[in-house]
Amino acid sequence: MTLATPRNLPFPLLLALRYLKSTRRDAFASFLSAVASIGIALGVAALILSLAALSGFQELVKGEVLARTPQVAVELPAGADSAAALAAARGVRGVTGGSVVVRGRGWLVADPGTRPVEIVGFADAVPATFPGAAGAPEGLYLDAGLAAAWGLGHGRSVTVVSPRPTLTPFGPQPRARTLPVAGTFEETRTQEERSRLAIPLAVADGLLGAPSRRLELTTAGLAAAERVARRLPAALPPGSRVETWREINRPLFFVLALEKAMTFVAVALIVLVAALALVADLALVIASKRAEIGMLGAMGATPAALSHAFLLLGAMLAGIGLTAGIALGAGGAVVLDRYRLIALPGQVYIFDHVPFLVRGGDVAAVAGLTLALALAFSLYAARRAAAIDPVTALSGAAR
Image 1 (cartoon, rainbow, N blue to C red):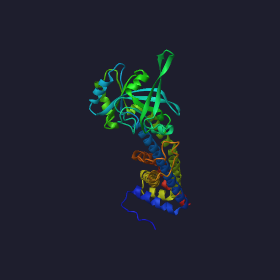
Image 2: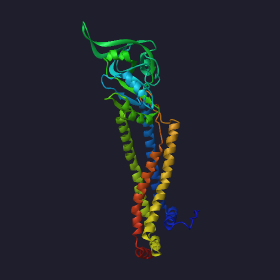
Image 3: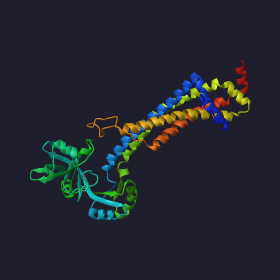
Image 4: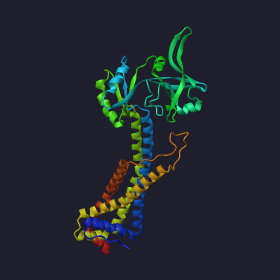
């Protein structure tokens, strides 16, 4: 049974619909049409799934990084009054909190052994960049995973050693302080992040030799941090350097964007190959309908109308594949993410499953690329159809 076609449609659209349905009676043309549409569907689905997996990973990585990155960081010049600078920064519109911190390298020495660490000194309360301990009172705070692995519970004494030496009667000796564990914070499972510890600012000054100080400020959100950063220089001592979360992590964000672009280009080659199959299908339709196209030309159909008809036919075949591919790719990504069907070894990776995140912009980019390729390749076939000479086509059919 064939579907009825409205007769009041424009001639190019009417002809494209007729040829779209007529390919069902030509086995080989029907096969090529199916191959082209299925190829486009699979290419679109693969591209959407790849981008969704990459977006899911990148979103979780960004979340982990941004949770441990200050929204706004201010490097103060040497000799600046950090307490006065912090008070001035807190008075800037949009700043919701902040703390003075110092950073340096050292070693953590406990009963199980010695480990290199990044020493972060803070005043009053643990900074927001230490999830799970933010706002806690002064003391020594370790990564929860490291504390559990080494058996360092609350109140257990550990020694923090600085490479900065102190002159003694026995020669230069490293500076060391023994402190009880006041608590733990949650970190990622990467080796580098497990190398942090937080200690009171006065202790850090003694260990590190009064290093340059830094303000870490919080705002109402990541977008607000950009606006606050533009207001801060006027309130800070001259020579202060203001950085937002975006500038601190600029190399990471560049790598993530480059990775996504390269993945898009690589997987899009599948769509390109499927679009090439579309040319073969349209060329076969033109060859099988050559006499009919010549007759339409003799009856007054213009080359532009015939060209437009085959462009529409290519767009319809691509649209069928595109719709099926979006449904398959986006639907598959949602199911895979919701039910966590692709598991990962948690002891190796920071995630226990492959996350998928379908972004509207990614789907729109895939759809735009697919339609652009389909129309570009269909244009070749459309020009071939428009170039058919009615007399030659009809005389060839008469033989």
